[in-house]
Length: 236
Image (cartoon, rainbow, N blue to C red; front, side):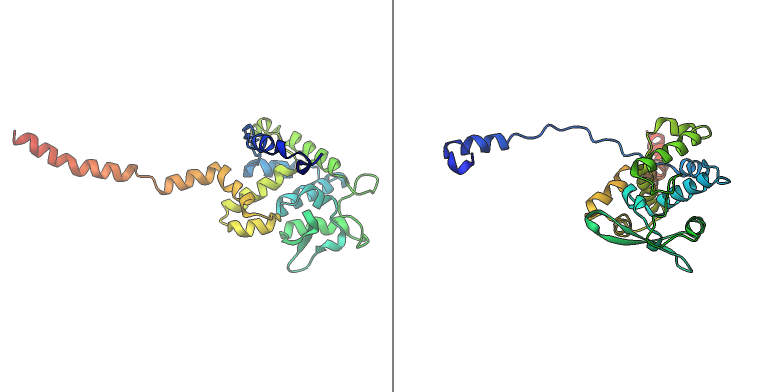
């Protein structure tokens, strides 16, 4: 029954809608520091076919900040190699963006897609079929588990493919990349979403605090006041 059919309930419905939602704690956004992501990238055994694929995918995720679905549906035709390598990513709402690739990323992907058809996916499983989002999640989990043996701090973090995306964004921010460029890089619709990374990065907050540290200024002021105080005591 529509409200128009029951006007006597209009006030009651307005009161119900005015009840505020219960506030809940926001989940902690997990990202990796540089030694941690480096250990994850080194985890796969690149001497094997599977290890080479795993390393290529992990490096691609970190390089581009791609969503797991974007990586799963990446085709050979989406990769541009040469002097300025890049990847074409199709994100939410079928919106397309292009991300530059590091030479190292381009090199490992080139080895991966040699003699492949342009319409085929880049990242395949052991049966030659496209990796699913669950397959990519398991791949990241394997690498993180191996990396935990050398980087104990990873044991306290719950890491998945989206954590690598967060890591890419935070590291771009630390490198001084403009926040609006990072928004376009990640394919965010709103800049508010990208601003979350500036809020959570403790390292950048610490640097900002250090840049406006007033401890030295306070010390200088105290030293300037001290002779005046001594002179005053001598005059007593």
